[in-house]
Length: 115
Image 1 (cartoon, one colour):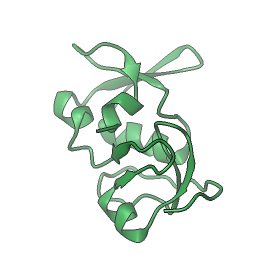
Image 2: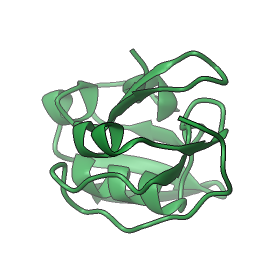
Image 3: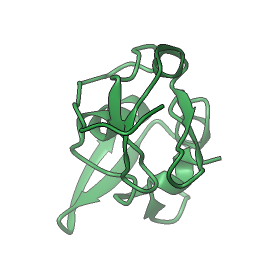
Image 4: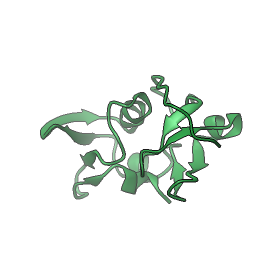
């Protein structure tokens, strides 16, 4: 994986590969993902050394199918876990975007995606 300028693609399915150029949801570093990482939807960021899992088999899908998020102090949602990931992949939200569901507390998205 090497650093590059970001290119964003829309994704609405946990089966859709990630784009080659992607921003780390933890540190926002620009990354060039290898094909295997794009397909697996899992990668390690060489900048912050965090393991990122966008397969949706993690906290997002296991806790709830209804999530909320905040953009510019405005509450958005409810949305599905797939939709949250598509917003992240498109660059509409970042790993620092606050998300929540019941009964979970509000927390940054990257805390749900980082192993």
